[in-house]
Length: 234
Image (cartoon, rainbow, N blue to C red):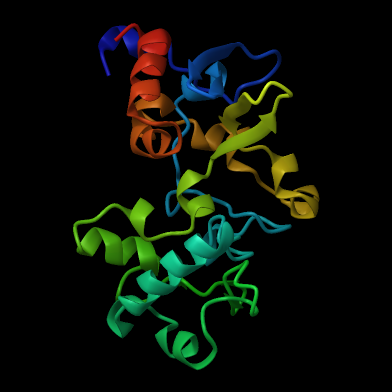
């Protein structure tokens, strides 16, 4: 980031009215929440993240993995199954449980299993193969993007996309920061929500830059290039 950009980075959670950047791309109109994308939010898992439980629980190292991961359709279920097949026991703490009972919560394959209070893929503190998501760890070890290994909700967070189809066939897609309400009933009891707390707004880059790979996977490279031009002048 250029020095001139550092002064424009928001160091507190976005609040109040929010400006929208709108970019048309074929049959999709992307509407971007400017405040969050120009903020310096960053994931602080392992560096102060308090998790999403009813009480602050940094010591558990669960981050946003306490309730497992929602799977977006059959194709994503097949992706996760294929990724699981590539995991070795030394990098996957619950490898034996996965072999015995699978990695999905039921036959619908709509969620990952919760084992010992968190997602089956979450390696817990002290595990020799590395703490954190086993899929993420394996992807990095294979010199591949975690985006190609993990459920989409896992790599998209804290980016949220709300879709709406207009009567004229144009699809509106609002890209914004995840909010407590987006967690549904779980959000009502969460003691801490990273996109609403100043502790997570400590990054050295804007979200448009720090989450560029994720944004490109969601909206496409050309749209991100135009969005960055509008947000940063670059």
